[in-house]
Amino acid sequence: MMSSLFLIIAASTLAAAHTIITYPGWRGDNLISNSTFPYGMQWMYPCGGMPLTTNRTYWPTTGGAVAFQPGWFQGHSTAFLYVNLGIGSDGPDGGPLNMSLPMVPPFQLLGPSNNPFPGTVCLPQVPLPTNLTVKAGDNATIQVVEIAQHGAALFSCVDIIFVEPGDSRLAEVNETNCLNSTELGFAELYTITTKAVGSTANATLSSATSLVRSSSSWLGYTPLLLGALWFLA
Ligand SMILES: *[C@@H]1O[C@H](CO)[C@@H](O)[C@H](O)[C@H]1NC(C)=O
Ligand SMILES: *[C@@H]1O[C@H](CO)[C@@H](O)[C@H](O)[C@H]1NC(C)=O
Ligand SMILES: *[C@@H]1O[C@H](CO)[C@@H](O)[C@H](O)[C@H]1NC(C)=O
Ligand SMILES: *[C@@H]1O[C@H](CO)[C@@H](O)[C@H](O)[C@H]1NC(C)=O
Ligand SMILES: *[C@@H]1O[C@H](CO)[C@@H](O)[C@H](O)[C@H]1NC(C)=O
Ligand SMILES: *[C@@H]1O[C@H](CO)[C@@H](O)[C@H](O)[C@H]1NC(C)=O
Ligand SMILES: *[C@@H]1O[C@H](CO)[C@@H](O)[C@H](O)[C@H]1NC(C)=O
Ligand SMILES: CC(=O)N[C@H]1CO[C@H](CO)[C@@H](O)[C@@H]1O
Picture 1 (cartoon, rainbow, N blue to C red):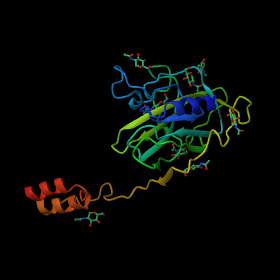
Picture 2: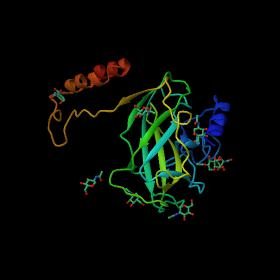
Picture 3: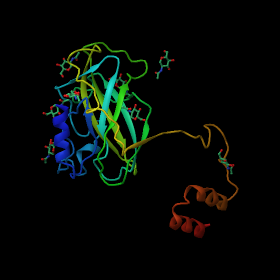
């Protein structure tokens, strides 16, 4: 099934494609734009416009592999990636009400260019969200979120049913369906605090000029705007 998915994807290479979960599968093809989704389906929270499905994929109760192709749309020479889990059936479509359980720390994707690019990302052992325990037979949904350079988010999901590790119904994970392509790179995201909550540092400024000066270090890459600020000052 997975190899046929790869073929379908390869055949639509130059379509305006987005994120495709190649393992353990996806809810279905949401790479389209039409009058219902004029901006493209995959921008719709929480699952790129795809409602809950019933053809669930088996996935281990101890966590397992998630692989996806992130480069099927322009504007992703860098992107932030998130993998979340949703549980329960309180959502409007009978699926999860939210996808609020992070499974891995978010990370940055480094792509080869800003145009659509091939390549896959393989996370071979995505754990269950912290403090969540599940049992065989439980349902859940895995969500992959890709934040584009301009801050908009692409969503893709797969509905799963948990089974014990080693269950014969689990699709084998191997180098053909789960690999990191050489053309893709990764970076960790760090948070550097520039003003601690509750601190007064930087809160009071002596004059409008100092506001502009402190802005200049953030806006150094926008000389036109900076020029306007100096003019105002
Ligand atoms: C579920 O069915 C849809 C529609 O046939 C298909 O596009 C999708 O790939 C299937 N999902 C899985 C995980 O098999
Ligand atoms: C747009 O595509 C979605 C998904 O296939 C479908 O549910 C919807 O009815 C389509 N809208 C139109 C106007 O064809
Ligand atoms: C899990 O989802 C399937 C349909 O995909 C449904 O038939 C089944 O009742 C659900 N199981 C639980 C425990 O909710
Ligand atoms: C997310 O969904 C779960 C399961 O339905 C629910 O317990 C939780 O309160 C929801 N969280 C938020 C922030 O809505
Ligand atoms: C792919 O790269 C990610 C990010 O560095 C890493 O967590 C993962 O283990 C790699 N996958 C494989 C199969 O090595
Ligand atoms: C997990 O549970 C422990 C113990 O109850 C708690 O201290 C911790 O904050 C929980 N972590 C998360 C991410 O909910
Ligand atoms: C990899 O696993 C898939 C099933 O997930 C299987 O169809 C394929 O033959 C396997 N490939 C290799 C090289 O073992
Ligand atoms: C004017 C001023 O106090 N600037 C400080 C704002 O906070 C950063 C990060 O803590 C400092 O590096 C600046 O000196």
